[in-house]
Image 1 (cartoon, helix red, strand yellow):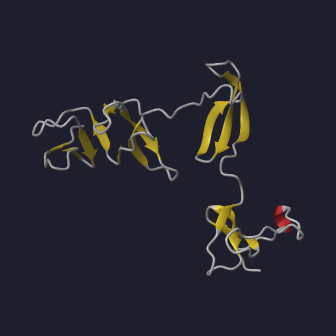
Image 2 (image 1 turned 180 degrees about the horizontal axis):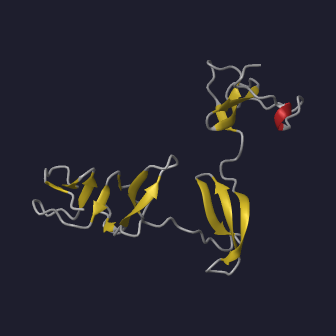
Length: 184
């Protein structure tokens, strides 16, 4: 057995009930990658079928927070782990859908989204911790910026806001070349 394969018995899979590939009917094997274990067709490379080992919509409760109550239903809040990472949510889900939202930096002032004009750009973090700024109307609007938006209109083209890029403020409009040094 190669180092990237896991034994079915290690994961509680009996030898008699081995699943088969829905594409070619070959046996499925459990493989491992950086993202975790998954099912893969044994006929690879002629068949490229894969599927996650765990249901990606599963949410597991890591720890119930004793001293904190849900502001909507007064139920217990818990640290949970789901498809998009860790979050704090109400234990009365699905009756109560309250989750603690990520907050922007104290000194960040949200600017309105130039694409949908309904939402605001808020600070978010990727799975790897990289900060970006995205419209709060997602998934209806998928506008995002890697640089921090600053609520100051461009003096050259009058675009709604500037972006902070390293030690400069630049116009967020790609057709404008305005920039100024960042004032501390």
